[in-house]
Length: 116
Image 1 (cartoon, rainbow, N blue to C red):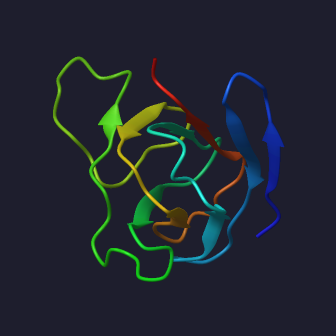
Image 2 (cartoon, rainbow, N blue to C red):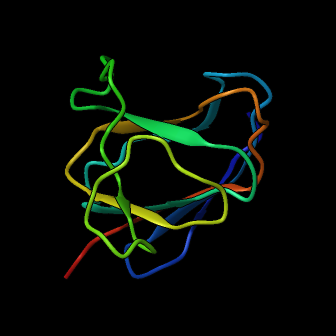
């Protein structure tokens, strides 16, 4: 995992450059995210899924449902496709974005923000 985290001002945090090689590799692991309530996710290659923690220690065992922001329907997905944008909302202590499948993940990015 070789991610970087950049504060972008206006209550926005960007985790970027997440990469993975194997299925279930953590490509992004956040620090404390309780101040944020809106999240957007992309990768340039490979598929990912998202696990969340409400207490900062214990993580969900099933992936979180994500909204495909480029889809024409509102059907949620649990596994992403590359070069698409996904969103989810909630109050989470920590978030882990993991590679899903054998195709290596590159360019994973997670934006954490506050919807006003």
